[in-house]
Image 1 (tube, rainbow, N blue to C red):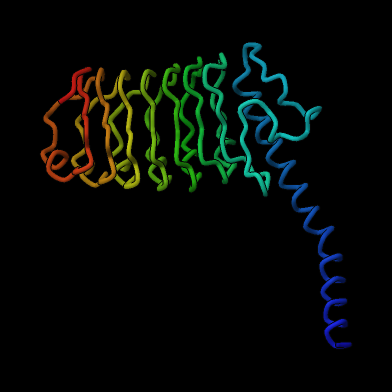
Image 2 (image 1 turned 90 degrees about the vertical axis):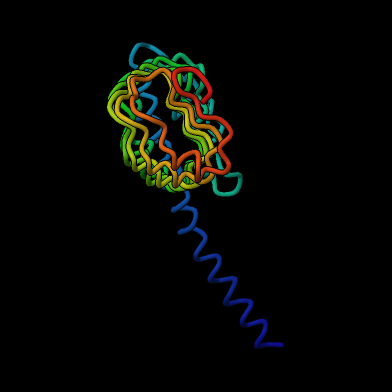
Amino acid sequence: MSALLSLLLMLSVFLISALPHSLNNLSHHHHHQQELLLRFKAAVSKNGTSLADWTPLHPFLCNWTGVTCHSSFHTVRAINLTLMSLNGTISPVLGNLSSLRSIDLSGNYLTGTIPPQLGQLPHLRTLLLYGNQLKGTIPPTLSACRNLHFLALSYNQLHGSIPPELSLLTNLKYLYLASNILTGTIPPSFENLSALVILDLGMNELYGTIPWEIGDKLSNLVSIYLNGKSA
């Protein structure tokens, strides 16, 4: 019995001594996330748009508008700021919020380009940037988001070709790229998008034929849209 009591005492001492270190790490991580979100806010608020409660005066960032955190670890899991009249650019610092599962910035007035750094988010499942004024090309780096299920970049001003690297997103179910200025052909490698349910490429400047591989191998595909019509 005395040996058991000694073991329990040693364990208690260890846990008590480790607690300040754990709390310090948690506090550091919280402040790091806060700093990243404030830098993101500064970029999307160029013309006076304000996320009023995104401030160190309200230090618990998990209660900030549009921010969702993991209930136990208080890591940022989702940012949902749809229809918030944001009118700046998307800061690449979002790529450092490694726990993000979802980003929804749709229906705003965002300009600039899609940061390639978003490809640094291994757990990202949803990326909704449709209905903005984004320009530039679609970053091939998004192909590194292997857990991505929903990618919507429609109704922007994106140009260039569709990156064939997107075919690496084998968990992707919904791909919306309509109403941009995309050129070139549909990548035949899209045959690898085996989970795809909807492919919307309408209202672009694509040419060529629909690769037979898409119709032959994508058994889950329900709809493919070209020029605003279902094909």
